[in-house]
Image (cartoon, rainbow, N blue to C red; front, side, top):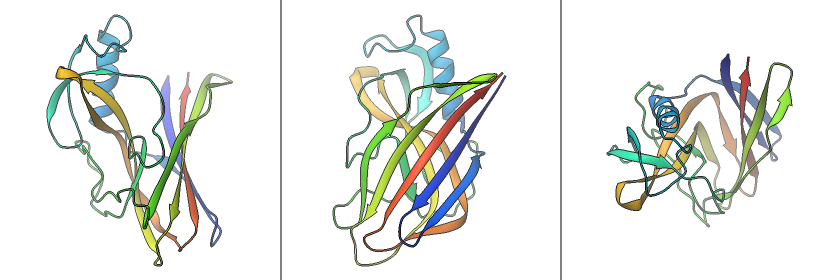
Length: 190
């Protein structure tokens, strides 16, 4: 069995479409899966913690359990993130090199959505989707994309954990008023 992830970026003005294999599932992703596997009810209780530790996006080591609930609302940076960093991807990355924060007058993060799991020959897949709008009067250049999960840690503190980080082979320029949509496609093949 293998698991692959792709990201797809589509910009409406000027028309751009990029697709690239995500080569960057980071150590946090394995820590997350390990914690889920060792927690008897699937790691969904915010009050009983998996016997695993994980680094959050502030580089703090925490015990954790995963919570599954509503996807990130508009303005939240949970889920798919974008940035303008150029630092090479490393196994121990715990955040984007230079994340671009949500701003109503800059790059606006839309709400996250996802598809149901689609059965495919020898496996299945699902998509995580988020749109970003450039509300500024200047171009915004995107050079990295990332995927985070929200987990609950000891003391019922919710934190972000980086699952994947990729550098774009060529930057995406989002012009003023343009919308960019990023899709992560997660596929398991047996």
